[in-house]
Figure 1 (cartoon, rainbow, N blue to C red):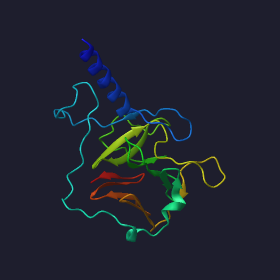
Figure 2: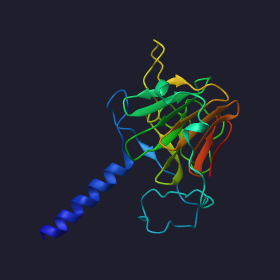
Figure 3: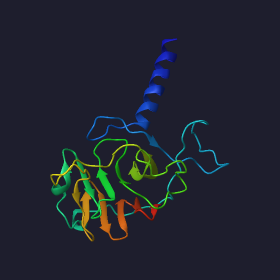
Length: 204
């Protein structure tokens, strides 16, 4: 009987940790919705009533790990404690390379013109923002209610996001390379990653 109760408690704890992470500024817990699988395609091993993850396409094996030689900026300029944050020059894309699970490296949009079909319930409301991330070798879409990938203000204003990563610059931290361009931000972690902008979001 004790074993059954302990197993049930561990399952409940694991489920809670998978869906929540602390907000950097407020201590509140964000609500994160992962995409549902296409109709008629139940995910293998996922609960019938729980959110399912649509996996990104498999990257070629042996993809190179980004190195410091790929960087054009000093990572220390973007560091906030154990994490690294940056935003696009427009301030619409905010990104973080996080030391702690479960979010890894990711970006979220302040405003989007396109909602990816994998997030049918993410409507760009203040508490329903489109985000993408890579963690444990998997690229995923997220719909978040909080600033998961938003760093603290660094310019004396109240706007979070971290330092600006200017167009053409690449930040490399812990084997992750993120590049800012006029078309958006691309982050690559050994062949898995994403691109994100107000007009387009893709996984690879």
